[in-house]
Length: 77
Image 1 (tube, helix red, strand yellow):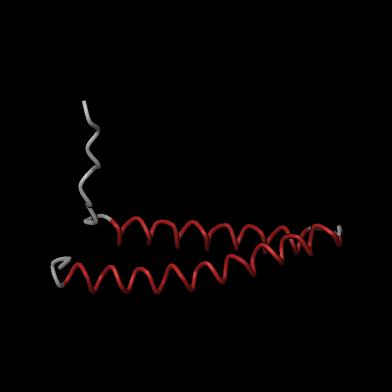
Image 2: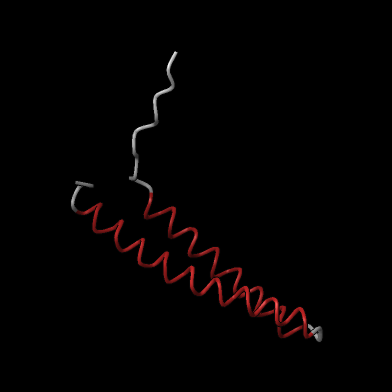
């Protein structure tokens, strides 16, 4: 019995990406709070570096969500 690949179902991509954006922003806010509440300089540096990477990821996710929204409007052709 051959395994068939699942059909490409992109209907929820915009919502899934938006959820990821929201969670990333939430994690950034938590990290910012930890940065302000800790005296550990190494921890501050690690958290700031993580937030830098999160900002980069957010830019990519925002581009991706725009592309998906346009594709959705066009019927995923």
